[in-house]
Length: 101
Image (cartoon, rainbow, N blue to C red; front, side, top):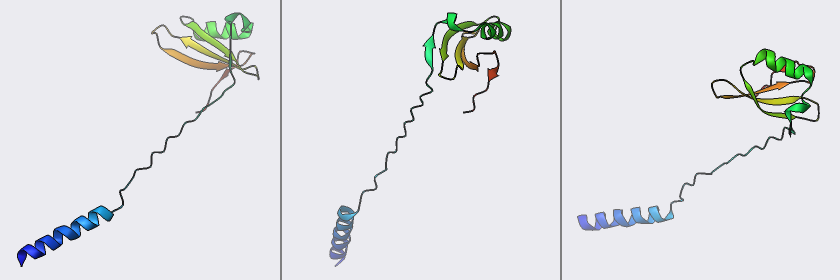
């Protein structure tokens, strides 16, 4: 009698196991592409006010790259003396701009 009960429990467990819905984790991948419409420019296209501010704020740094958008805002990649890179924004008149993330 015990064998029949054990067999029934095993069969019942097997039936439930085969009919159980597998729990699938939905993979949500979010990819954001931010187009800030900056185009790379040579450093010779920087305005004198911008060059003056760069030399005043970052006297020991080097200009890694310069970009300009359609509004005339410059995006500058500064290579600091320590080797780290810092992205700064400045308008054509030499006013620093703080970008909020």
